[in-house]
Image 1 (tube, helix red, strand yellow):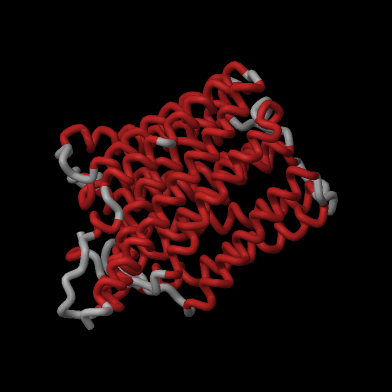
Image 2 (image 1 turned 45 degrees about the horizontal axis):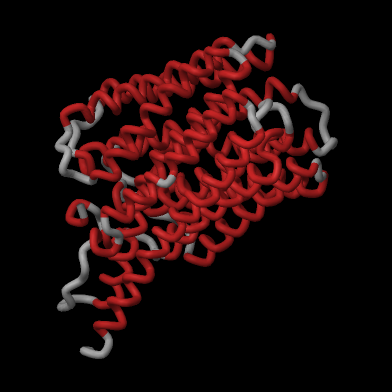
Length: 419
């Protein structure tokens, strides 16, 4: 793996790692919210408290994982230079997470000040992310399809954030807006245009390099990627102009399912000995993403179920599987930079053993099952049990990620006396 990645282009390890280590903290917060008021949170998608919980997952968990992964992936795997210095990364992390906190508090408590702050902080954070990444994507050479996919995803991330800022101002009473239509557009741009497109683009590297599959055929991915923005924009126009959301919903269902089924199909003959936990997380996450897309066809309860299957379970499984690999790799890079040549470094698998990764991922399974059951049967004890399981599962993920730093420090302590 490391032979094929450009270590000299990798940023300071603190830049992506602070985002990756923040994500499980938001997962634990989601568990706390479910423990406090889980029954009410899982009844309807239109409750502001439910919207707050959704954004804990989409921004707090998925957002931190994806921003951290992008900041590592672009220079190391795509040859894209990140603009700015490590201090700018600190600003990005602070703006983003403070904005998420303001949004969640504003939604959960109908707090106008929090919503107004979020309307400023989150678009500013995504604009800063775009400024740090998009110029490098445009100037880099080679891997056109990979760079195009990442550019489309980051473009939709910025658009989603700007539209989210407008919605926050509307909820805060500053603007009069067609909220239902704009929420549908915001959700589709964020889930499909930002999250799924980014994962599908990264899959061009992850599937062959880590899971031993063939690459997605370039013509297939180019057709999928080229038509998706056009249909998302056309669906948004129809939803806003006529009130009908069929085109927008169909685009989300078809394109998410196409990616999930294609990636699963490519893995059917992949060697089982490679990256067992990553293989399990991607197969499970892709299967749940396909089920989430189909669940959107089931009406109102289907929409809630799709949110749990896709945004709360499936997509996080895909991203956390990669985050476990990235954090271990970041630990190895840090040792490489600090020890220099002539020191035999521990392998990536020693910094984060396969058994630890598997335990962290499997701990998410009880929480997933309880969340699905709580949405379907709407029993208060199920919702609160899901909250407890979610809190413990993400605590386990956080401890697993932190374990890389502990092992790296122990290695450095063992080397220093000899030096």
